[in-house]
Image (cartoon, rainbow, N blue to C red; front, top):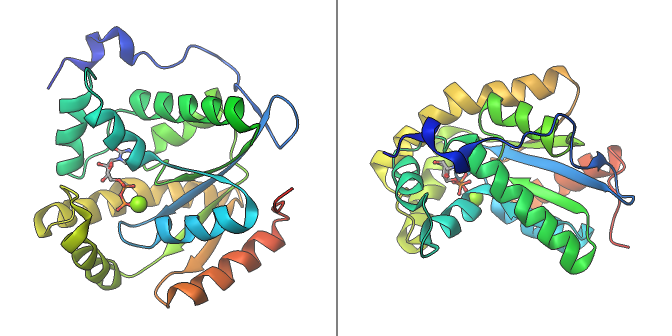
Length: 223
Ligand code: UDP
Ligand code: MG
């Protein structure tokens, strides 16, 4: 493992105020965090939301896997071992990847609506992101039992090629979710910023609930 604290590339952005203001106007960004245990169905539901509401989908896990595979990345080996162990990669890396992806989407298409999937999974990431990038509108939380998630992950593991869709990694990911990520959901719940959806039912039924939640929170649709 590289000495993280000595790595100059791993210094969190030094800004003391957020890069964007919340919303959809110029200089702003609308961010919805999407959380739920591994296999809860975040990615599947995000595709529906992208199709109907015109959000850009940014999966923190996908961005990390991309960075891991990018030739010349100094973080490749570190990311690989964190993912396999179901641990949370140091937030500086993930926040920077998200910020870059947001900036590049805004530059490319002018779209300022983002679904941030699988992030923040730890309190420090939540606080830092809202401090230096933008405060979230709310968190969409997929509430799912471990047995449902387990079944889905094993099924996905047949074809996903993911290094963490196996029994051993799944166990560790569940543990990290309960110990480290649920406190984030509870934190936002206290702020009244969680839309909670039962994710144990079939995916069309889940999506109906998502749409209800979005309408209550006045999420803007496609332009
Ligand atoms: N990960 C991380 N920080 C994040 C998001 C993901 O370190 O902010 C790592 C973590 O090791 C996690 C893995 O990436 O277990 C896979 O995340 P992904 O969101 O792809 O998993 P999913 O929830 O879709 O099963
Ligand atoms: Mg996912």
